[in-house]
Image (cartoon, rainbow, N blue to C red; front, side, top):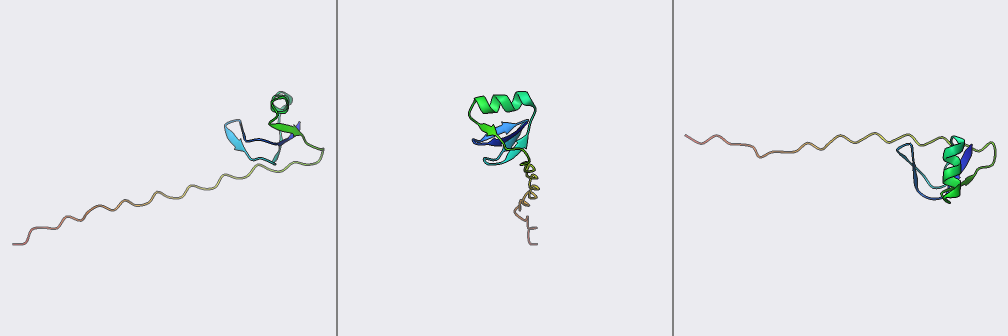
Amino acid sequence: MKVTITRGVMIKGEPAEVGSTVDLEANDAFLLITSNKAVAAPEGEATPEPEPEPEAPAPVKRTRQIRSPKE
């Protein structure tokens, strides 16, 4: 069943954006609709879930350079 998300909610461990339309099993859709977190979407409207952005590489931690003692 297609629903449009009206409040922030997690679906199967992933956040669903407000205003997005997702296709869910009937039980999940009913739960979201009765808890006022979604409304039934008109037929033919389904937006794909956004792709997760790739994580940025961790910054390189610079350490203090050890200098050898002068002779």
